[in-house]
Image (tube, rainbow, N blue to C red; front, side, top):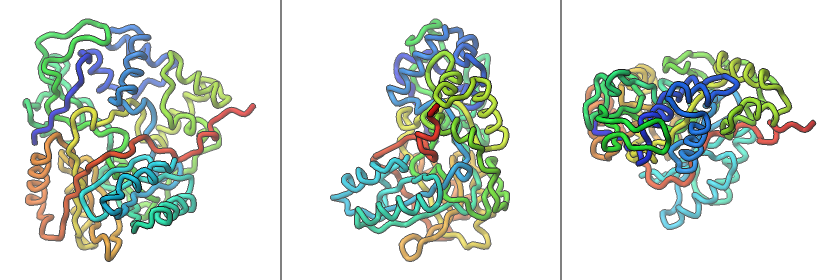
Length: 409
């Protein structure tokens, strides 16, 4: 599938690494940006300045945590059917909710899809009910039932010598299963160790998906439900979420929801905001990663700004006795970025198996979807494809009140 990720001018080889290499495993060190600077051959202040610039330009959402959805609170994917002439006004009302973190137009009678997060299920229901009441539009709520694959990072996959993914070809996505890295053409020259600098040749990175912290309307699974899965995509069958976060964890994670402060000693700054020492903040984040409360910790990219504007939510109405097996097979496809089961909402919504496919061209995404469906036999059942249109809101999830992280001493 033709899928070209385009880096804007001014991003050199060092900048490419800063975007790509620390989407996971961002250093838990007192001076993390100095660690990155030493790796890419830049000064610490240049690295910090680069990330500030990319956040301002929209290439990076933040540096921080992507949380396991059912551990800090409740979340749900919600769809709303708005009159087309009133869609923008309805979307503005939805986006005004602090608990809404993604809000997209999609090609369907239910034409507005958004993700809601809240401290608990009761608060979430209150938000959804208020949106339905205020807009007068039909609303359906589609919580997660079973997760097959939700991994939003772009795993680096570059050949260290050539700078090129070993199996990448210009204009064609990598065929390696679960490769999520940025791929770039083999460079003919690289600019020196300052940012901004020269661009990589052509500024185009063939292949690779760049999902951000959350992909349009679908990346935050809904409420905790039976049959939840482990991050790797194999359903665990467990109905019991992990341990609730401690009071100290909640303070740190509430402050971290906005992203890591872009200063030389960010963990010390988080400690100042929460009334904790730097070592306590570092230990809290490390423990949250170890027990799965933090799913990944690093640079969170925004895929639209990097050229992946054709994203399709592909859905099928699969019999319940075989949907699990179909979902696991679908999740194994390299071009599928997300895959999960949600409930039907009859009579308005008949589909229960969902996946997302992202690319730079609509026709290529459709061709990839058709190929996958043909090989897996999925189109024997009713199906639909909902491409996204306007993006009304996109940011990271907010499960905890911002005031919870503040130090009131």
